[in-house]
Length: 303
Image (cartoon, rainbow, N blue to C red; front, side, top):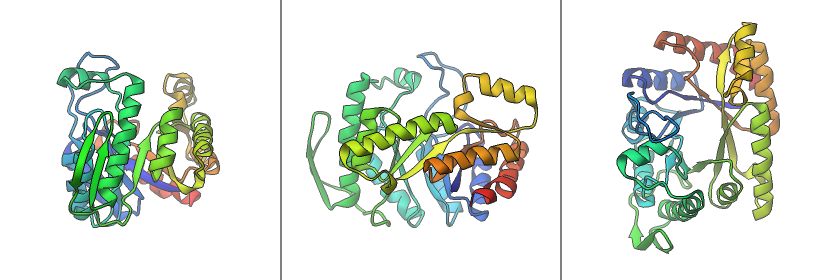
């Protein structure tokens, strides 16, 4: 099982780049960064808080690392035109010498769409737009010219130069819905979801059903899962986490208990665990210590 880091996009840039160097030096698999413009509130309301822009951060991460994969988790096609996504991806693939992964999703965060006047279409239209966008993006990355005549996008003999360094720059899709999963199986190289063993297991089953529907081997895609990791032996804290709103998205307990839960995810068929820093501590020092503990005492037991 591979392991990747995911810093909160509000962290100071110096901390983000230090984490990237740390993860690269220790042989972590990936570095992911969210594509949002403001803290999520669940509705159209706003709250203060720094959120660094992913397409500004990732080139810097590419420049200070040598081996780790990097990518957005994930870029919404409700916001970004596929031609822009393809050109950004190809360029950062050159900056990173072939280490870029393009994470895509249909879009969901209400307040950033409302604040910037970007239409957040109905779920069905969002998925339809995504279906066109991923096909266009894939074509722009893979071919010299792209022509496409769809409901949402029209491209006429459109170039996308330079081509990526990678022969097949991977696209990963973050999703759990049945229709989106079928689109992922048809057009993506990787699939991403949230959850501890129970939630991720349910989503894995839906993913495998979608692959069967379109005649794709589920094992042919690289699959990743992220979960809130809480390393603690405190019984009261563990009970609160497991019974709370984020319990299904969490992996919590002692190092031994976390290894057991990660083993369940591995046995479900997941290739990569993405570890957000959101629950790893209130300070940069605490977060670094947590990542160091994970790298030294947990990850080696899942190799």
